[in-house]
Image 1 (cartoon, rainbow, N blue to C red):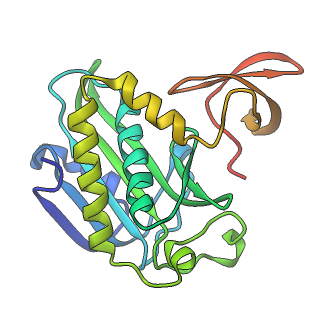
Image 2: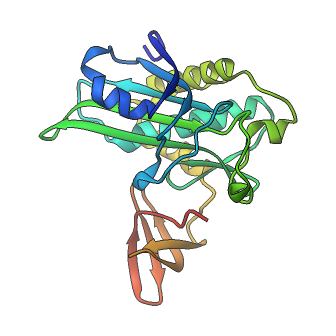
Image 3: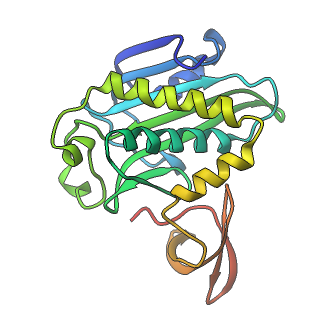
Length: 235
């Protein structure tokens, strides 16, 4: 069960990296949490500023059957949004894996797999959330903390426990009904079909209209034709 075993660190390079390197030593559902990460990272290996005061943890899964990585991303992104709802905070999911409020990033999820051929040996889901940490000046227009939203400090362990509890419920409820979870995830998405988005292609920003939202890509109509988009602009 998620969170039955919790491994804590004061400082670590990356909770995701630790579980990827040590997954064989720990049971399914193990959670690794750190007060700070020195080399936290997100999608496309973008550096994630992870100082003390934030919530930085990873969860280990050892599925018996093949499960797409994106399913776990949806479980945790929806779990975070539902947890925030109990704090009277209305957040949305920026496709495919970030939680935003007031147009600024509050949290991100990174799901990584360790495979033997096509068989998943382990899946690691990393969660990074700005909670009580100071946001660097250069990121203040793009990132926000929960303390800034609520006007008070938040217990990191209680917050993590609430997210894990919601994740357990979602996992149990939707592991055999993945399409139903996708419908919930889409309801929380900030991007809707018909919206204009900015995306990255060959490190260049381009714009287009979303025709269709899939779990791992967007179909976007641009001046150059319809494109499959795998990464939106971080701004």
